[in-house]
Image 1 (cartoon, one colour):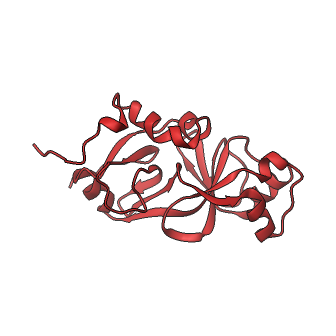
Image 2 (image 1 turned 90 degrees about the horizontal axis):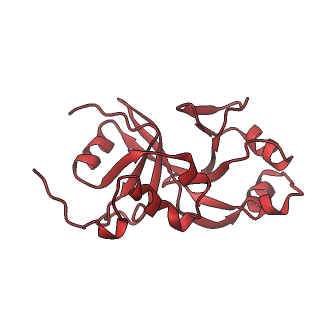
Length: 186
């Protein structure tokens, strides 16, 4: 199979996606290599807020706007683990850079900074991630389970959650509503 690197791309779930955990999702691929892929869903908020996360980790924040920000379902793997997808580099203990603009941080020090009014300005916190073993994502793309397009940070951080999937699809020049459940193969 041809090797592709979808790091820094969006995965747009096709309308016929049978796995309900991924139906109508927009996933940002943080890492993709010969060993597999790791991504986080960026359009599925959950019924938890930053205040809940701060409370569970023993942190407090006086910022009520920050405290009311939603957490997101990042994927079905390790759903008890938090990941911070953010723009700009930082001096965090455990960060995976995704290109020059975005990063995924898993260490508590970024939460400490956010609670204290520091940290990155543009971020989202997800619980869990989506993972694929070697060649699994390539096979799913070949089977038309996903559309792919280079990601844009403004889609993740500047748009309301309900507009992100359509905006990513528009990057391809199509409307999500016009996509078919049926896939054709040449």
